[in-house]
Image (cartoon, rainbow, N blue to C red; front, top):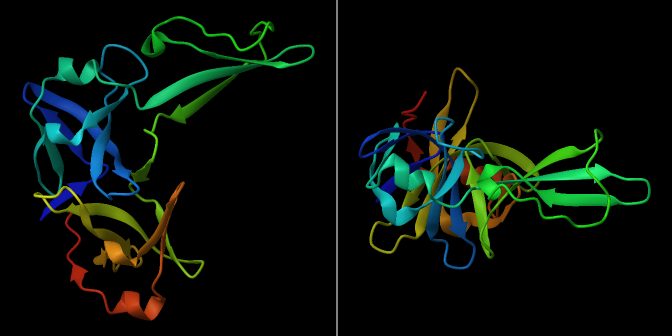
Length: 211
């Protein structure tokens, strides 16, 4: 088994490369396909990149080690797309801007972008996949029972086997290993379980190793 920490330090073969901010999972196969990595020292914004999981050379409880260079990460697809919505006299305009999007505006209407334009950031998640973020709420029967800490992946198949869920108060936090069969749905910002609170209490505990 291999644990994939989220919100952990990322290192390339030639130096530090920010931190992991999400794991991208195929909804059907439940395989981790990418890691979203944020590094504000990259060449241009947006500073978040989609790193294919086959670039992961190894992980620890605190870090992820990639088998590529920082320059290679810099050239990978952006995880965040930035749009600007501007209010005209009769309609709204939408365009993509910034160097990360190629530096060329793509206009959706004849209106011009004025002082009232609003910046909108969206995650560029591949079709049929979902982003799992550190700290995302885990719910059972509409009740919050914990939050996402790490994912456990079978190194042979690449499939998620368990979700390490952080539960408890600040003075008594602990991780519990939730089998993937107990996950009913992964929605934006939360994971829904198909088991009740009593079943959660019976799950095996895993010592919390990250602070």
